[in-house]
Length: 335
Image (tube, rainbow, N blue to C red):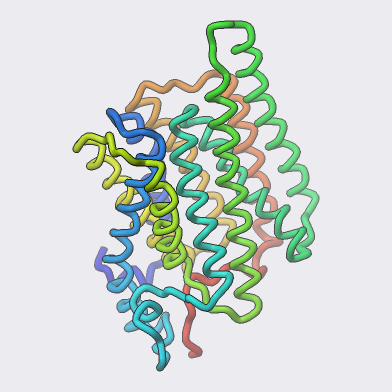
């Protein structure tokens, strides 16, 4: 698809592009299992660093195209950083969003080094429910009964999934539960940070702030790289490891994050939320097929309850969410 065509996607094209985005997101687990010697923080550093490099190259090109298409205001007085990379140095919401992205980048890769891909992805999938709770507390948004029921059902699914794994571990003294606990707690930082990110950006935009999500991803990559570099030294990754992590930085993070923003211009919020859940399914299947990481029956049962609750919540709320506020991905010029 030509680059300029991305600014005028049909609904069907946006759906298929969003499916491709979730497939790109889902490769992190299986790729991380191919690494030979890269340690925990080194894995996170290289992925974040390559994401940063990729976005430093992609964003000026991307924003120039959006500017030519009239999607970004060509305002006088913009600094170089704002014009080419969308950096809003004076926006508090922009910096908070960048910090949230850095937490998500770091926590996700660290969690994968502690526990299974399936555990991490299923915990991450409850992000929309965390967002609903944070939005209610901060923005005063009322939660529908269906959302409360989805929260209870998803919580029950996670409790069953982890309860069964712990009971199985306790019955076998040789099994170590430390990785499961640490990985789960670290993975939990991802949906919490995502909920804060979404709420802060939405609140900022309701107060007139111009926030483009992709530059926030760039800031998150920079902050994650800087935070993990001291902990990543001395480097132990092989050339093959660095190549795999470069792939993640570009194909699993930088490119799909930018494409997801494009999809959000043509899809309703419930559609994006539903399609994003494919990452969980794709990720588990890829880790199963490509790394031999077979999810246990308790993971499949509990995970199915979580995903089912999320899907049902979105489907039931499809009509009621039409016309509700959503995050604007770019600052559109008045027509």
